[in-house]
Image 1 (cartoon, rainbow over the protein chains, first blue to last red):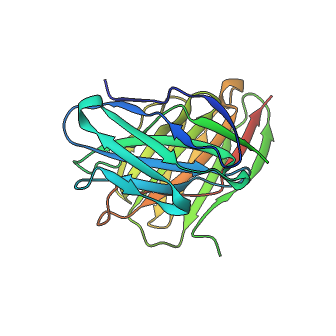
Image 2: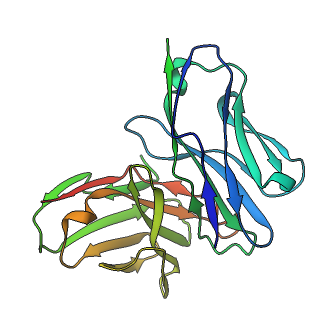
Length: 114
Length: 114
């Protein structure tokens, strides 16, 4: 069955600390991968995406993610977090057949302490 | 103005009542989706529509119905609301040309069924 798993449910960091949020997927065939972010009180917005090509993708606000096919992973990273990065982060996947059916992970709540 | 709008933003209703959540978009996208978000479960797909005449069930469609009144409008109905339908509901859109995984979300409707 297709699934996306996020291992860290709640992460607390101090400002300037480095961030890595784990995401693993189980998907038959070619997969497209995404990270969405939901700031407090706001709607989800796309942080970054991977369709093909360079496995290291850069997104908005200094975030990046690395697709490692052999590990079925797409971890999100940021070298130095800010208080404004406090949000909930969702990893998501869909098949390259472009059906539009996104499968979301459970979400990781990140709290950054000033 | 927001590209994807949802009404109402908050709603409290009683068990057994019929309720409709509405979604409108100005992005000109063909594809529209309804998700529900529950703590610890991420977002789960309820229904999706690739155009006015194409509506499909998602992962958790039982107890819900939808109507695609026009390209820009996609409504979600709970025919007889029950307490476990208490959740945050999101509408989303995507452009067929860009890739269906890159979705644009509305602000959400917080529904409470008592």
